[in-house]
Length: 73
Image (cartoon, rainbow, N blue to C red; front, top):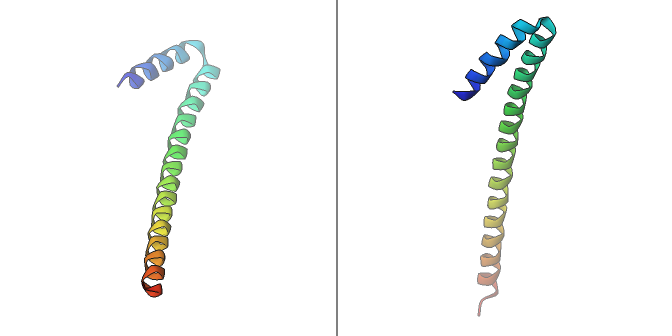
């Protein structure tokens, strides 16, 4: 909610300043959207990495148990 207020203030000051400032405000807004998308991509990649890592640990544990059982006492 606070961002909308700031954006309105930036836009109103941009209109008063002229066309060049308006372009800067629009670019800043677009950059924030790109940053949000990039952070979402990073989150998805991190989740995939963690899931794969956990699966590998589980497989290693199962293989270890199999090896112990096959050797016997």
